[in-house]
View 1 (cartoon, rainbow over the protein chains, first blue to last red):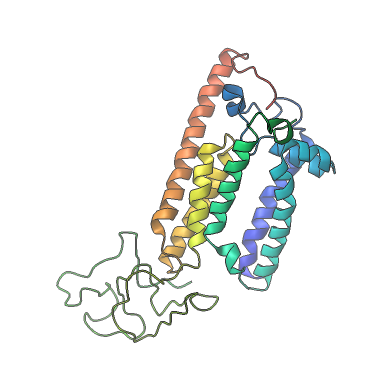
View 2: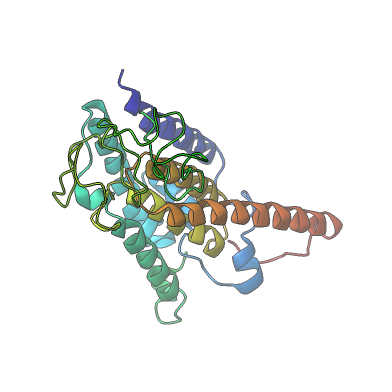
Length: 133
Length: 169
């Protein structure tokens, strides 16, 4: 087996283990994974707030529930799954990902999107839609 | 992957042995001053030695590297950047580790990817050693901060379980 396949497989193992834990322990139960210090101290929702609950909802087939918890995570998770498959396929064939994926701009854009989402969901006008509810 | 003759940005690159006539000579690479067509060690900025061409073919800018090209590479621009994204990802995740309350995961990933980015710089596939190093440092600092904060919160919580009573996360 190609040596480059190790990284995607190791990633899948770690993420899979985390998802197994998540599937067994419902994050909708308050405090099941501890309290988030940001919400506890400031009441602000960070861009990933509701992410565990959204993931749990998606794992249980509840897309609407996931959407109401965290829009970005709901959209990002399927994208990440597809991206992982792409990564694996590329490594199996010993190719490289296209330039736009390897571009240094991608992480900057991702960070920018997260920051914008974090701001928007804390605006009183948008909180009912974008904050976990 | 072979170790390239150059080691830019790390401070480990040796400017030459004492008494060597060739200031660009690398210790243990044959007679000083003798031209080595396989891999002259120029202190180019993140440039790979010709002995270590990047895998996956070629430079994006179409910048050819000939084994016996002119001894001075024209500054650092147009140099290999294929794996620069590693360093930037590390930096972004390191920053995110401070922004996100659940940054434990991003801090660890920032460290791992940052180390890979620094390795890529050493292999001549990237030229942003500083960015990658910043990502690694941010990751470690975030990790340390979170561990300390976790211990403090844990102690406070054990003294007063209602210390952090709040709404749902």
